[in-house]
Image 1: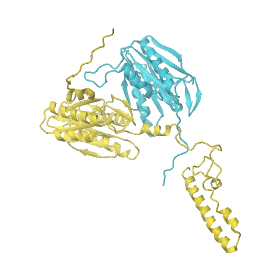
Image 2 (image 1 turned 45 degrees about the horizontal axis):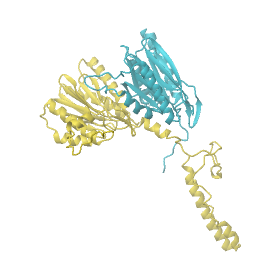
Image 3 (image 1 turned 30 degrees about the vertical axis):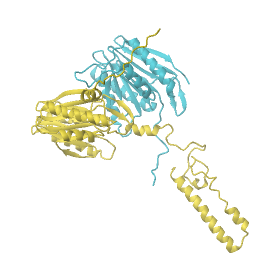
Image 4 (image 1 turned 90 degrees about the horizontal axis):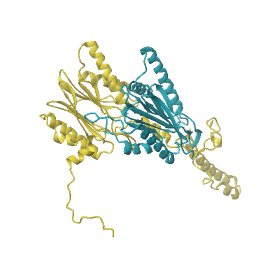
Length: 312
Length: 223
């Protein structure tokens, strides 16, 4: 309703301009005294505020638009940032860094652990690597509730598949199940940017699935606001023939660098490995401590040492 | 063409703050008792804490009508569980039930910021913290509501527990004693009342331990 008022306000002043000009025309033709003309030319536009009042008496609106209360209220729909916050509360923040890559020994999966709501860090200990079943992992980016719920749902569907078909579901199948669910909710505001990593009969498998309905098979992915930084480290250090330790260190380093430069990523860097016998949690390191282990502070030579003053 | 915004919102914010701290063999759940709307106080005497099961208490701030509806749904689900299984629901089970209940209304959420506190099956304190649509995690302590941004940094300083993600898994519960934890909670609310207009009047504290449930109440500034 509020948008009509400014438009009408503009129209009203336009009408006045038009009426002024037509009247002046009429004046000339009918030869009325110029005094009337002067009165009609008085500019009242300064007295009218363009800010519309709730239920304010404006005769242009009395034709059924305004059923609003009859006293003046400030025209804000958002009194104490409440509506902005209530949108923010469901707003998904893809503030995160997750990555996964396939190498000779399987799949390496790593993620940070920070959750942010706008500029506030709501948690530094979020589990972003979700254990779907003992041989498949999912990563979380986007809406925390969306990712948690749908990964748990995927775990249930995978178990039902196992019971119905007497064999484990493939990574291809699991990622397809999730992608189809997310596609059916397309456009409704879910925010999920996940990677499904696992080891099935065909060997290591890695898929990227998102809430737009996209599903990509690949060998290296990083998702989230810190992903550009992670890709930089990952691309420069990646080799297919790495040992598990080398690959873990690469993943850990990539997450660390992303948390260093991206404000929305931080907390602890978790690294998991998916091998032929299932997944194992390799390490969890606080990124603050990682910084000092990668870049230790050199003790500087003290030129003048301060000592306690002798109190007489 | 500017986007038209609704004049009416189904939600309102009744303010308030909730805190919970988990200990080795106890759990403290607290919430202030002020209910407001805009700049007005509706009542100074409103309880935001609800007993869901013998060992699970939920404190919620936000829109109290949604909170009331949520409490009713969870209480009735717990009753059904008791009839079907002939026992009380454990706190971790209640935590997942709350998460699912919140997510089922993903596209028209309960405007409720919840903290679930209780004792797990080993008798250790557990606190679960939620967002409005159901994402949850087990933590050692948590604050939610309008005063949360004031209280959480203080609790981080006093109680910083090792991340529950660490390998090998370390306990997230605080080493503080029960009396110290209750004192800490009272301090938190006293400070939050100073700087948050929606927090004040009095704080209702529930202490859960092996012996049962204890209630405490402390007056706060009413301005």
